[in-house]
Image (tube, rainbow, N blue to C red; front, side, top):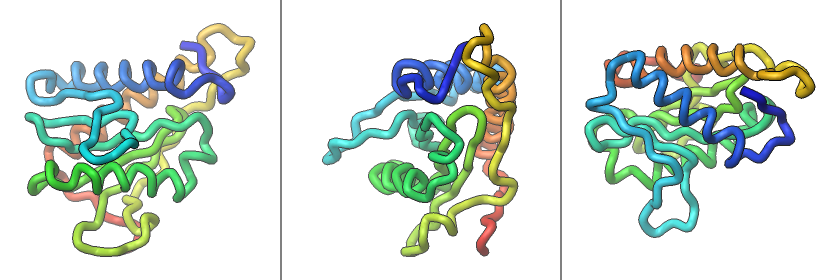
Length: 173
């Protein structure tokens, strides 16, 4: 896989994230209950999340893809992903609404705090950020292979946590 920060997010990063999520679902043998939707149409909104992961038709995770680590660290983009969670609020049911922001090298996992007007940074979960290998020089063929492999492994762990509804703690309790 070849990726660089100047690449087009939708054309280059999104297919890699999609493949990584699909690989994680396959490895966990959860294809019968999990599905991934790219750019789902949200009612009454002109905006759309990059991806939504569904379990038996209910959303369990919103994924927002960015190109750089600094974008992943930005509360602005955490808020963007949280906005999508809120747009899907009627479909979450009793499941905890998780959302993540990633550029493949770095991943921030957050969990919405229902019924609170808490700032987005208070949704950050312990063990963040998840850090994978950096992309190698763009002149090197397959410069992102290691990062993608590690990213897929992290997704397996996260999906397993979410689908088993294990308790994950917020950094700011």
